[in-house]
Amino acid sequence: MRDNIVVKRERAVLVGAILKSESDHDDELAELTALSESAGAIIVDRIQQRITSINPSTFIGKGKAEMVKQRVKKNEADVVIFDNDLSPGQIRTLESIIEIKVVDRSELILDIFASRAQTKQAKLQVELAQLEYTYPRLTRMWSHLDTVTGAAGGPSAGAVGAIGTRGPGEKQLEIDRRLVNKRITELKRELAGIDKRIVREVDARKGLFKICLVGYTNAGKSTLMNALTDAGVYVEDRLFATLDTRTRQWVLDGAKKVLISDTVGFVKNLPHQLIASFKATLEEAINADLLLHVVDVSNEDAEYQAQNAQKVLEEIKCAGKQTLMLFNKSDVVRSQSHFEFMQTLYPDAICISARAGWNLDMLKAKVLEIYNGGIAYLRITASAGDGKIQSYLKSHANILRQEYFDSTVVMDVKLGKSILTDLKRFSPIQIEELH
Image 1 (tube, one colour):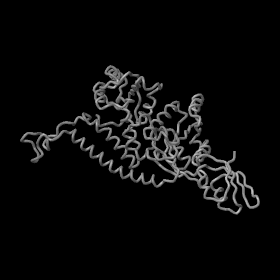
Image 2 (cartoon, helix red, strand yellow):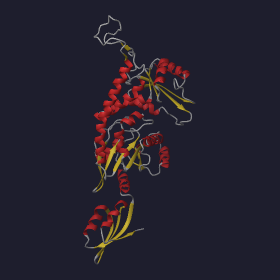
Image 3 (cartoon, helix red, strand yellow):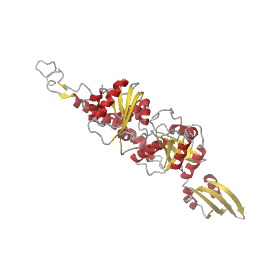
Image 4 (spheres, helix red, strand yellow):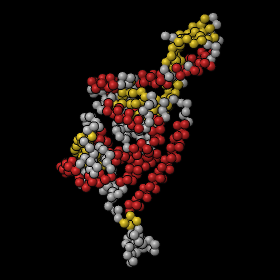
């Protein structure tokens, strides 16, 4: 039945059709395998093939669909999961040929999100995304799409029912569409209220330096969030373990505090319904001053995942933001040659281990440098009796040397370039750049 779209311990055959011009990745079904297993499916067969063009009726062509049917019967599969987004017509045609349920990539991801949603906001966002996905697929999805002939169930004069309820009635499809439209409107209204609150919260943070953790799902963002802030974010080794954004304060150096947020993980071709419904959740990344792109460098597909995460950032208009690449799980790298290859591709990346706490001090120092707008080394000469400038520099800079000469004090300091403008309010002082 097409109204049962939840994949739970079903025997699944995975199908990936890749246009020859699109990708040269060795195992395009690796991610779909992880997604399907995360949804509870048992993988019994995988079919990966390259096609020259998309068949408008079956996506893969009728001959290939017949081949999938044979593999399904051989493995006694319950569901076929495609690593592609299929049109409603393609799904119907494939199901008529293969004779079991066909699920496309977006439907699978939406199903996983539905099982992971915990908070009211996440549940509303997922339901909205599912309904917007389902709406154009209502036609012939269920077997009850027959004409509703009034309350009596028949148009004849002897049919039971009150006056005004008899007659041709309306098609069940039209009723379903009206109900879905009504629910979509209700969800959008409810989410709009939540979105306004989130926007107010984001606006209230103006003037504060905002950092956002982004990256592929299961890269270790939540673990890093906990390591940096003791946030207590839920952590589990599975895809999309957390769907909700959490923002915490991170103390960089003494009085210097920033806000750091965790976001929902990315995957290749994240369904546009989810991007739309999770707009407020992704608002943290859109408004961030710095993105920390977390990459699971122990994964053999690290390069592939990093590139796809970057594509999602482009989709949500974050591609131009200042980004710091973090190679997480560097302490459990399986292939040294692959690790060195990644370091060659991203020479500025910082190697860390969120779980072991390795190199987090280096990460903090780099973020502090970015927060400060870069580092400047200065020699500042001021009146020995000017306690304000001395107190300010002790709080906001590292004093490398301090000497008194008669009525003056000379201080060699290391500070962030972002506070250079603040020094202008202290006078009279002399500032000389050290080389």
